Each structure stands twice: as structure tokens, then as C-alpha cells.
Length: 363
Image (cartoon, rainbow, N blue to C red; front, side, top):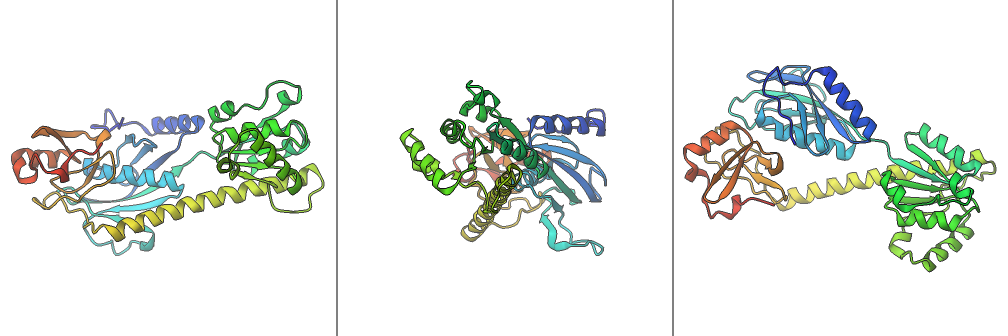
């Protein structure tokens, strides 16, 4: 649910936002803090105003009116997906003469009739990936410590298994939200640990083992019913060859493998997003969003499920969070702000025909 504050009495105080940040950090939930760094009147916010956007699009605080909130929320969610901060300008005016580093600013047209301007800085906080280290060996303990020092959350699992108890549980790994599993059993229930890791939803499984031992364990996993697609998630040996001899050196090599995988996965995700955006631009000629006063402008087609094109100004509106809704001709029409909703209600036939599929609700 979006939290759009309407007055100073309902706006969360800075301390409230800080408490919410801490709760989200403790829960391992991503979020982004949006700060106004430039405000050109007329606008309903000021420099220094802040809001917090959760991963589901819920917005707490106030950084501008309803026309800009859709842009703010989507930019914040993209920032969370990439893990990178960004600067966003929402304005119909040229960049200010004293503005710096224009290459790093993401520009959007201001869709509201007020025609003010905003510049925002968005700082995402994405929880560190969780590594489950399976094993009760000295290398397992060292790897857990090193993983934390290089930005992972790391849990050590293996003491129970060493004592003969059920210590390797795929469901438990999933409940904890495990991203990576590092197996450092080194001869103590290797197959049980590896099977549990591969049956979990972990993105990657790293195994401290020689090439020869790794191949033997791969074959054992096939006999246990692990398919080739899942075996592709197994990385063994766990890290680069550094001719390790001591537990500390073995752990260092394994954690180096974790770091390399973390960056490879992040870079692949960023490339995929860039390619998807490029493909969309190449296949769809989408004009820039017009301001609300551009009455009668044709709406921009929106193919993404769960979104709707505001027929008045052409802005894409997220259906689940829409606050301004009108029912007309047997279908719901969604708007980015009250201004557009009011304009539509004056002459709905001007913007929308009941049988027009272009404006149909996307589910």
C-alpha cells in the first residue's frame, strides 16, 4: 500500500523514517531514500525533503505532488534493482546553468499542469547477500569471518551435522533467504551437504574440493536425482587456484570465488536490463510524456502488466497503487493525479471510448 501523506500532521518525521529504515534493514528488505536536492517553483516540496520507497512501491514521506510520485517510485524501484544510486530531474525547463554532471542525470518531463521542477537523489539500500557456510571445519569458520568482512551476511551451519544430527536442510536454507551456499565440509558428509545446497533455491553453490573430488561428487548428485540444469549452479573448486595450504588460505580462495560470482551476477543483471531497455526503445517509438495541459494528446501504449496509461496526460500509472480512479463505460480509468481525473470527468468522451482496447485495464 502506498502511503501518500496529505498534510504536515500526517507526514512522518525524520525520526520515523529513520526507525522505518532500521526495521527494513533488520528484516533484510531493500528500500531507497529519496532526497530533494533542487526545487523550482511552483512545487509542493522543498530542498532537503525526504521520502522512503519500499520494494513494493510503498512511499513514506513527501517529495512532491501526485504527478511526480509515479516517476519517483519507479526510479526508486529501478535503483533498488540495480543497487546503484541515481539523480533524477523532473522538469519541462532546460537544465539550470549551474547544474553539474549532466551526463549522470536521468531526465523526465513534468506531467503536471503546475509545470514546476524537481531534482532528486535516490540512494538504495539493498541487503547484503546471505551466504550459508556448510561445514564444521577450520576452513568453514575462517570463510564465515572473511565473507562478512567483504560485505556478505554469513551463517555457519555444520556443528549439528558433525554431531550426527540433521544439520543440512534445503528448506531451512530457503527460509533464511540464502543466496549462496559455500560447502566447506572437507570429507564430513560432503554428499549430504551438497545435495541440500543443490535442492535449495540458492543462486550458486560453491564447493571447496579438488577437480577430481568435485567430479566424483557431481556424479553422486546425478545418482541422487539432481538434474544437469541444477548442477550448472555448482562451482567447484570454489575459487581461483592460489595454491592454498592452510585453512585461512583455503577460506581466502573460496571467498574470492564468492566475490567474483557476486560481481558476475550483478553485471549480468545490469546488462540484461540495459539490453531490455534498448530493445524496447528500438521496437517502440514512444514519445516523451506530455504535460497535463496538452489536452487530447494520444496516450502512450503501455504493454507492461499491472500498469495503465492515463488518457489525459499519457503517464503510465501503476494500477495497484492508483489513488485517482473513475469508472466509465464499464471499465476503470486510472490517473496520476487529481488534476487529470477532474479534466477527464469534464469530458470523458474526449479521451476515452468504452470499447477502445488501447486504454483497456491491464491485469
